[in-house]
Image (cartoon, rainbow, N blue to C red):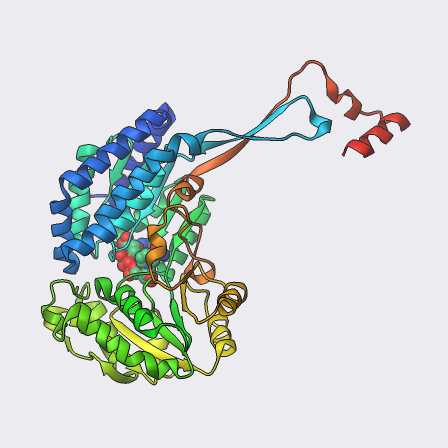
Length: 464
Ligand code: NAD
């Protein structure tokens, strides 16, 4: 949609149109929902090249990474949803207490109405469309506001979605702060926001005016806890893989290595080897290594390269928005690089003396979106599970939790609220309505009506 003249009026018209559509019941039938998902699936498969090209233009993403992390991922999410949707939507029966018999109790999923999805730039296809898949599967009308920071992908979404999805029920509104602000002034039935916590607070404050529920998928510093005795070569390879894909611009990337004792030294050569193996000695020329999204983020990241002893990397080129995969050792927990989420290809190693100190380090800070642990024993696993809180906890492999469709994805505390993927998206984008159906005859409620005789009193106390 091109925004000319009064941004507010155009946006109000679009949202009003979707609300009117929802009121007609168009989006309710499961067949309509499935048609939308299948059309989206076809688009992603038939025009993968269009979107892969957009991702390359915005983030220099390689085609394989784009497939695995974005386009193929979305197809899998659609397939999973199509496979299970009928079952998920089946009313769930519940037992009723003796005092209410005979009657039937059940819970049904009811679409919320018109929902707003605001997505970020780092996985600009995945994080825009994965919530849209859930919102449509749950029977809602949707406004998608892609990130203006990934402009080619945003334009591709605005061009292609209306061609394949029912434009009476789905709208893409491109733009930045003015457009999002105008959108947030509208009344929605749910707002699903992915991005940073500062804007998350703006979204939540705007939603509060209409009592609109929100899902906030935020970020934070996700640690990779490494214990001596773990297989450090494998741990290093997997940490490097999770950290440096998309040049570190992944919400669930390991933000830093929290190394117990000598693991802080022992893991360094393995990290160096892994970076060389995956991106060669000259990562700048690797077709699999991405770039920083823009100069603003480059300028935010470049000074962080000074916050520790460089083990590998450290090179940067502003004109190419390139920062080499970098590992920093001897990092002070109070340094800048440890202050904020890094969201770039810089991996600090912080040393702690033992597992107690590692757990204390984690719990003293904001609850992370993800906690990765490479530990040496089942006892350590149990301790980390019991004694820390994070959006997700993954042993042995970072970021891969996203590939498991049966588990929820979301943050806790500062890393967000709410969750999605698969059935959890249906939960997020539906109202779970309770239904109690009690026949009028016979009137077994008589016992509960006043006046309360001694006999009624005795029976009621036994039944309730
Ligand atoms: P971004 O700059 O693209 O912003 C996200 C969205 O907010 C965009 O659509 C943008 O237009 C909108 N926006 C920006 N400023 C606004 C304002 N003042 N008012 C209203 N809307 C506004 O992306 P970002 O925030 O830089 O994304 C990076 C952050 O997102 C990181 O913290 C990362 O960890 C987090 N993230 C979280 C997840 C997750 O799933 N939990 C996924 C990706 C990124």
